[in-house]
Amino acid sequence: MEEIPLTGGNVSAGVVRVGDTVRRPAGPWTPSVHALLEHLRSVGFLGAPRPLGLDSRGREVLEFIPGEVPWPDRIDLLEPDAAVVAVGRLVRDFHDAVAGFVPPPGASWQVLIPADGAEIIAHHDLAPWNLVVDGPRWAFIDWDTAAPGTRLWDLAYTANDFALLTGGVAPAEAARRMRLLADAYDLAEAERRELVSLLGPRARAMHDFLAAQAAVGKEPWTRLWREGHGTHWRHRAGYLEQRHDVWLRALLD
Image 1 (cartoon, one colour):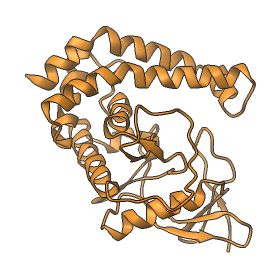
Image 2: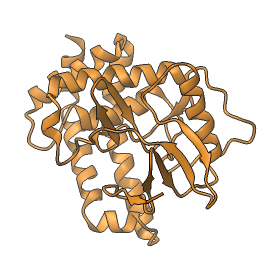
Image 3: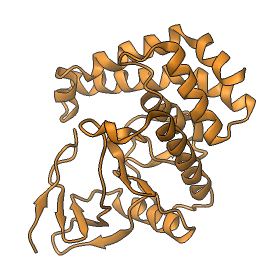
Image 4: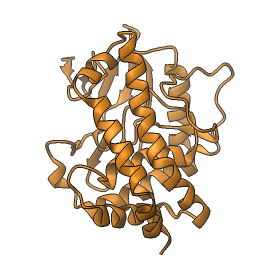
């Protein structure tokens, strides 16, 4: 069948659509990721693609999820408040679904940025560029960096992007959206305080990772560093840390 290249990602090359499937390069972590995706499917979580093994060329095969990836060209598809609420519920459903997952013996994961714990197997990139919207079904893709982490480490990354905490959104509006996200996820008070304390460090971890990779010339991270992604994350970390009390009041009032 015809192979149709799928573009738009910053770090994934060689991704194609073949019929109703996606084929992409596999790695040592692929069997563990597929076990995770199989578990999510088995407990009724539909916010992730179904794994379909490997093809004759050794590429991983995944269900192709039809729909739109709103970021960055079709962001108009998302009404901000409704999107933040839907994402908060989707992330909570994923975290609840993955809680019962037992990794296979000898599981291997692609760990790019060490998390603050190993409570669950987290996605680590729950962002608008990995969200597919198809009517009532919303799903996250690009699970190849799933690895041990915590619920709040995952959610802090989500809040960075879906609450639009930078990029021209006034702090008061960003804080209001963060409250919508926390309410949709149903965070307890102690978790809200911890989430706020993780926002800056989670963003700064992105900067530090890109800086370290660029220092040794490792691609594709060096390219992203040259394109200004490191600067973006450094500025975002500072923005978040300087407004710690704004986020805290919004989540607790």
